[in-house]
Length: 227
Image (cartoon, rainbow, N blue to C red):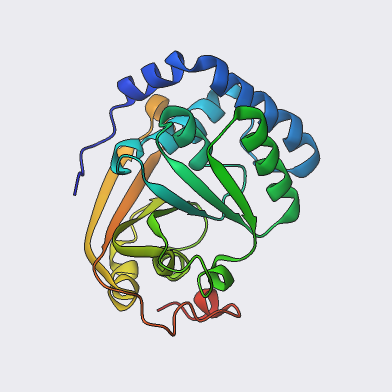
């Protein structure tokens, strides 16, 4: 499992090479945020560092050509920057809020992204056709790690990866949940964002075996009573 620290010099160069596409996404974000309140971070420098650079911190962790589910896509982080930088990746964007789904659909259409937007809850969708379908499931700033694992792990097929973008270390609080849900090796990558914008953590979990059929529990149990 690759666990090198993010190379923000290379990430900045990647954004610069695709500046027109990143600028188009930023313009969409600003326009829709005025109506839909997608993110509290909207000033250009903060968006480029806290959203774009942070999303791309994990870009080398996704296997070539991976089919990826993103849980709680919101304003499209990390998925949209990842698709702008890695055209080999395809995404299923899972979001339960209608107005955010409409923004994501617009971004996918106008930026020509390889993505499908699914408006629904991960805990419901993971009991249907999306169960253990994806090579990777990722999420950013959605829930604490033990709760997030129950949303994401059932979507990952055996041998795939769960990648969680987090603000601070939660390794021990998430370890039990990961084991129950079929996880194997678990790694933590901590890093500092450029320009002093704070510390972040990436968690990587290998899916070692199928998730037991009883998970996810649904009806809010994942948040009320984390594993």
